[in-house]
Length: 386
Length: 82
Image 1 (spheres, each protein chain N blue to C red):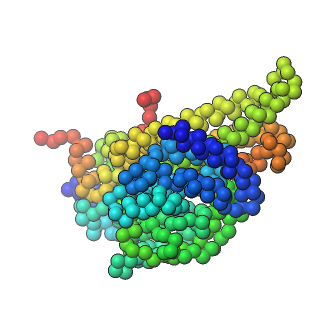
Image 2 (image 1 turned 90 degrees about the horizontal axis):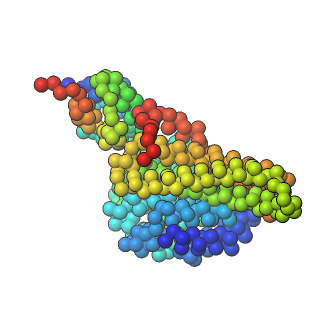
Image 3 (image 1 turned 120 degrees about the vertical axis):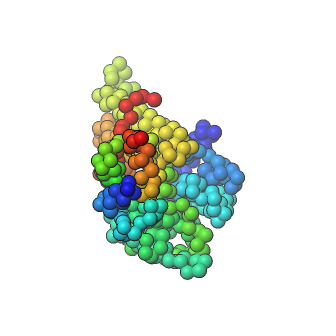
């Protein structure tokens, strides 16, 4: 199953994503060609359960697709990852709700693209706190949120929004609501002119929505965040970053091979560093594979999924992978030298370098480490191998 | 008795948006604004107050869901007095 998705995604990455990656990056524009190809090949519903009209693919399959796409265009891969992170929340927490089940069916059928609005002005990047609140009025609710980031918001077909449960609820008592394109309005409050990941178009918007209350997910957002959102984010983001590092290393390896061909019998100077970077890439890959396995086990046991041990493992994965990926790309640049520093050579690494820098900042590593350090006051770390 | 000691700990460490004396023993503390950070502070305070160690398998959301849930866990960990 995985290999079928992988081969299709690899072809799409090479034939479409890679071709438009440079323009996407230069113009900081939405990678519409890649998104259209993903839609045409029906990738957007792959994780929707078969009962609801999707392929019922596992998170492993989605992670594998993210890795492939990121080797062609990291922004496209990140958009695909973010879509699936929202989808993972719907699948884990919307099964009991008829509205959300038919919504998943529509996502698979119509290949809808999901975005999210979970950050807010005045909160300082804390997902688990909201200022805005759902205001119910009969069978409908209204909502207005100053979202500092809604990635590809204007290109999405639906948005998942976090908000306080009601106007008197404390900041951490949140719900997640799904709103459709014809139910919300976006007013742009900030643009997206960044160092890297330029194609995600993560502009800020003031979102105003009105929709039926049945579109509010039944579970508290605290549980959704802990059980599906944070872990699927860390796993799929890490897969995207691995793809960036993997393509950077492929370029470095091609460079070393070309050098070796020019001077047969001698080992090029970059070869040693390539070996070092290859060890790092293997470590990143192993950590992601282990993380996906850990998630798959925890998924079947709600206790484990809500445990501090699981949260610590996912946090550690994110921090480790984001740091190592930046180092690997840096190594690749040292190997390729000026050919990597230049734009428009087969060994160019500028985009990889800039895209990889986002990894430590997408939920700041410092915030994650401080969160982990609190959890380690309670959680005893794993001492055995299995 | 244990309920009241747990309630005092919730008042001192729970950082809730509402007055702890108004909580019933089964009020959902997460719905009252309990964060995961405050949960860890509650755990440390419970361990100190009752001289217990809460094992890893009980370090989950359900344990800290309400005053009653915490009292139950504390009771199960206290040495039997018979």
